[in-house]
Length: 282
Image (cartoon, rainbow, N blue to C red; front, side, top):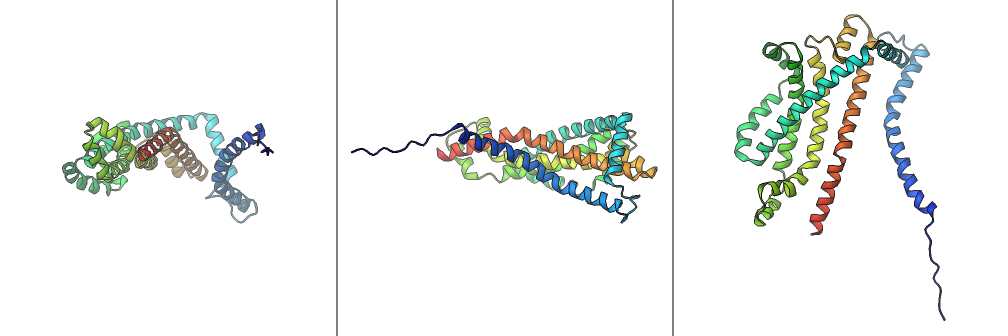
């Protein structure tokens, strides 16, 4: 006597369900992030419409949107955005290179850390506005001083992230690498780099955020273009809608560039996770 066990067949619908759920989650997560700002904007629009505020000093979203559209039609908006983006990109690149190199040296070499780190920590405590008159005196009021100020803002979190991540690497793992006589490049590729990558990505994102903050101070230095100039122009001419519009655009650009870094570094983090699982299985 034989007992037949029913075979569970996996249909195309069963396979499609997880795929559909993943796609749905990719749409829902950004929508959840937009829920709070859209709710606040709608609430303020209703408050102005119902007469609880005249909307003169804090204009409603419709007026801010109309200002953005007007700036876009005149061509000013694209020009100011392109100028600010180029400054942030140049300053971010310089700050990342300098912060990564000095952070790696300080984290890997104890003597360099004792020599460099106290000075870097003291410089980090200086407010961004304090650098403005010095950079104007040294570099003038043109692009060089603005890019240098942004690079200063980016440098410190990248330096701290790299140095702290390297310094906190488990020394037992490093000793194992030395026992297996790994060369310097092999030690960096197989031990230090996977351990440092998550903290480095966070440092890049924090540095980019500070770069966007420092660009405002940089564009206060006699700029005639850029989103910071729109802020000053709106203040001087009494245009609160233009000020809020510039702030909103700053927020959108900052979030977009942060998302691009997150997207660009995702393969590296997946490689780091796979490398760590493989090393643990070994």
